[in-house]
Amino acid sequence: MNLQTTITQTNNKQSRTLPWGQLGIRSLALGYLTLMLIIPLLIILQDGLREGFVEFWRQVTLPTAWHALKLTLWTSALMTVINIMMGTLTAFVLVRYEFPGKTILNGIIDLPLAIPTLVTGVMLVILFGPQEVLGSWLKEQFDFSVIYAPPGIILALLFLTFPFVVRSVQPVLMELDLAQERAAATLGAGGWTIFRRIILPPLTLPVVTGALLSFARAIGEFGSIVIVAGNIPFLSQTAAVYVFGEVESENRLGASAVSIVMVAIAYSLLMLADYLRKRSKSSKRELT
Amino acid sequence: MSVTISSHTTQTKEQSSLLTWIDKNKGKWTSWILIAIVVFYVTFLILTPITALAFGAFEKGIGEIISSLNQPDVFLAFWNTLWISLVVVTIHAIFGTLVAWVFVRHRFPGRNLINGLVDMPFAVSPVVAGYMLLLLFGRNGILAPVIEQLGIQVAFAMPGMLLATMFVTLPFMIRELIPVLEAFDTRQEKAAATLGANGWQTFWRVTFPALRWGMIYGITLTFARALGEFGAVLVIGGGVQGRTETATLFIYRALEERQYIGAYSAALVLGLFSLILVLGSDWLRRRKH
Image 1: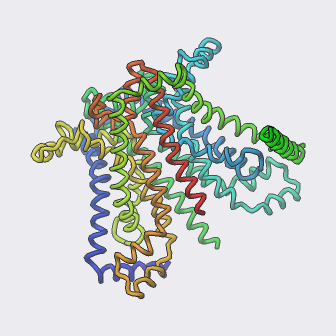
Image 2: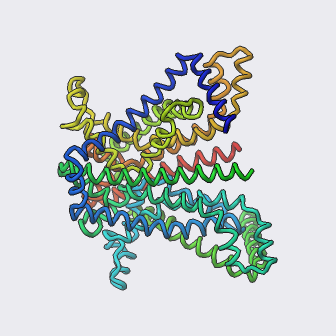
Image 3: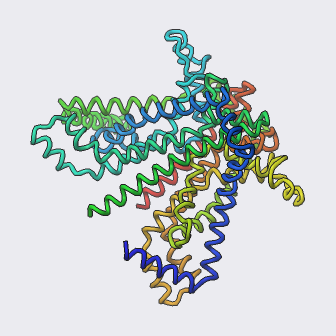
């Protein structure tokens, strides 16, 4: 730690000795970030709070807005739970087992990152839409609708966040030492005990990080949801779709207030993920 | 004749490898079940929707696809998407590299705070991103008087859509380059400097080649994200047919107007394009390493 601070200090000294070029680069980079990032974020904060906190809170707790926020949170949470289980299982299968078609499966995991989210929505409507084969069958047999209902939202979110948990767990699983598991097995531990006591503890952190990223990404999703869920207040209207509606009907305060809540949730989730990542890095350094 | 024979032999070979695999894994029921669950889940969640899109577009034959896409407004929409993406990628390639450089090489107050903010566009809703720009540049926006004086239109025009796409794609280039720059050994640069290279020569001949693959991947991700951007562009651009309509906005309008074949075909074209882009750069990178 001491060494690092001295290095930074010498770096600082160096940059002070050759000021113009370095200073120019730094102010260019920071100016760019301020224009692109900081000013827009501050504007929304200022606009939502301009009538005071009471008014801000009244806008957030309006029945439609409140319901949209709740719907966004519970669908994202349910998606995250499914994603944690299936993502961890997928990573486990990809790392531990050899089977035909494994490389192809591994490649398919990343496809959602390459497909525009609006296109994802279109895909799900073709599959589960009320006029389509599968959609109408589900409706008739089980009275279960996917499109224009919460299941469609969850399905869309699952599709686009699938890579996050898998790709966060996979590298950690690869580094795990098999000797520990063998030792546990010789001591008489069964498959489930080995998984719970030996494999799971080091995976907790990457699973949580991947889950936080999925959740943060899901809160703001718009393109796929507006197609899949439509815009039905109190049924399938999520926070992002609600903000869109308020912008269109020029209710500026309502749009800004709900936007602030969404930005605040996203920011705290990202900060938490970042903090966990840093802590895992420093604990690794202590071990070695 | 020889072709059928060879295809036949490869088939038996594949079968036999599958059979030996089954033999080897006899009795490992748990692994079998787990693999089956994952394959089923991935097929259900990812492959089935993609296949459905292709079937949906081809439902009435290829002629219908061509006639639904062969319209000046659709061409303009795809053209808008393409050039917005190209401009955004160019700007981020330059400024993203600059920002990553400053984060890795410089120490200054507030560095950690700003570093955390860089990821925000990843989680901020695209609708909110577009709305922020509307608050800045819209009719009653804070910067509206300035913009009016300069005589440029930002909201409901191309400059606003460019800015919106830039906001949404901001993290990709920076996040790809930071680890590459951190892993880069600065002794190479010092060696170049001792050999008499000036700052620009050192960057161009020593640092840049090391960054090249990170840049290519960052550019690909930025490009793919820009091609598919919808919410932010919808809010700031308004999606005026024949003017501020991009490919995604056309798909949205076509769905609203119940021109399903047009929507599905455009979605298929856009999806394929970004898929080829990402898989292509992935393939290039794997071949290099």
